[in-house]
Image (cartoon, rainbow, N blue to C red; front, side):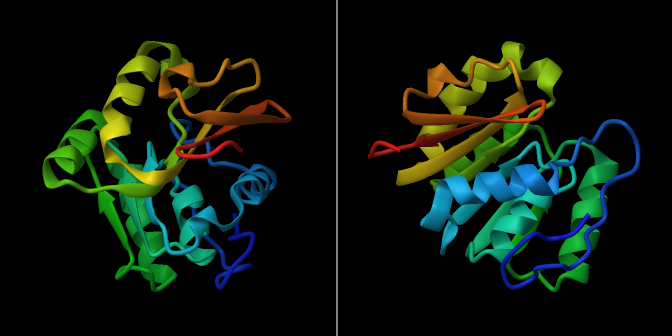
Length: 184
């Protein structure tokens, strides 16, 4: 895998071994960042269910100020750390090996706010956790936050977020972009 655009364009990133990870393809990453435009510039990014970290790394390459990578599993978390080191991004990126629940609860307690949230949970979990994640995310969104949710092609999106929404389909992947504060 490679970074698609930005300061690190063309730089190689590694994906964690094993079937647990489903890295976002370069085509879908390009589509996502095209959909959100300048929202990435200077943003505090939360890459929730980070997996390979490809989305958060792409955001950092394209001008995000910082990125928090939340990944509960040890192998993917280690791989993201290795990528941050190889790309010289350890000052701007931090890996938090914990559950999404623990991460969002800690962010809420600490008053941390994000301008861009990249949400790519395992597709099989989406129906069971969608409402809980939406409830936990809202308190950590900045006033003009953008949330990007990736899911299977047939996914109905995240209506629980109750934000302005735009959807696109790319092969077997559905991408929904939610904006707080203004229509998309």
